[in-house]
Image 1 (spheres, rainbow, N blue to C red):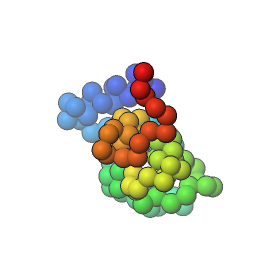
Image 2 (cartoon, rainbow, N blue to C red):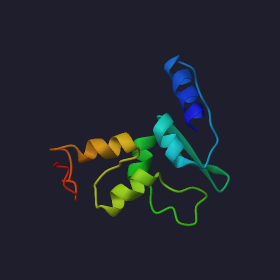
Image 3 (cartoon, rainbow, N blue to C red):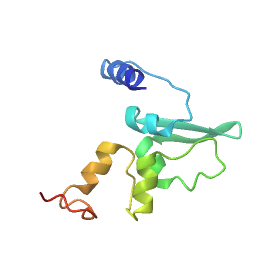
Length: 106
């Protein structure tokens, strides 16, 4: 998936439109700005990935799961939407989120 992600990122950076059909929300969160969610034969969401993740309810029983970082952030009680590893680490940065539970001091 790393090579596919790089290809998607490179095509997007070149100004090309990339369309992917997937149940892999981690991949979507990492490589796409917009998501269209299809449910029951129709469009249930069309818009920015981060806005969808912020409002998405529990996905139990759905054909997809929220990204791992989104689920972890919610379990930690974080407000808003964290969807990528980079976003998760930024949320842990001093002054932007809760302090890490484990000391990082040498």
